[in-house]
Length: 330
Image (cartoon, rainbow, N blue to C red; front, side):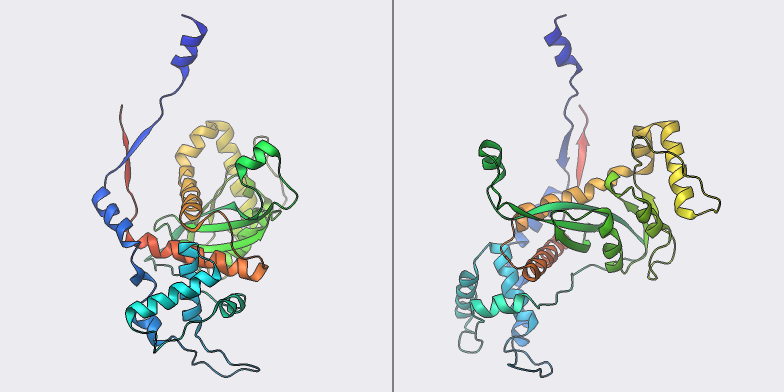
């Protein structure tokens, strides 16, 4: 047998997956296009600001009105001026153009920096499994193909989006934006602070194999009732750490190092359920495909609000229906 034929025989056949709930998922995809997800009676009734007075000029529009306009902007990838025109035409079609005024583009830009947004997260009956990871979002600069062909310019700027996913519902329960040099492991603490539901296990890749991460999971914040089990693979040359006093996080990591050396890395991943970490990879891919891989805002505070709006947008889509796949046996 020739070398070419031997090489072709050694190549593993690609796994094939199919969606088993296609009918329900198809209806969910159709429902995503409904404007009633963002424009309903509650938005119309609370369009104008009715909160307490403040120093200086008073707000005309409520936070809910500004959030709706900015959500439509992010969903449809519109500019601020286009967003103003879109909402004006929407009110005209609904017969509300003489009742409700529309915030202009400068108002939307100014209010975006100080907007407070709460992520719409579905409540769970019991503890949850948390999956964390990060991805990059481009601010401005050439695309990846242009950068590979002609080199990257000095104006290519990125932001890192750190996500925490509920492994059961696939909702984004925590998010944090940093600059391009933000350390993944350092963002676990602010992510855990945003999670109000008790966490049983935390899945993460090797970038989170840091002692302060294991300490934070073994001694979690006050809202967590019990220590969190860390499903984090140690590095290749990991060694046992010896201490005179016994600490939960040191003993737990030493046990994982021993199990991995005894059973092997592949077997450890299979038995520990490490494959669930792929759920956050799927969430990041959905964010870039639905919301977009690039930020529109230029100021830091507006970028933070834009990221949170994108996460809330995905959390509105998730309850409508998600695909359930199964492996096709060859």
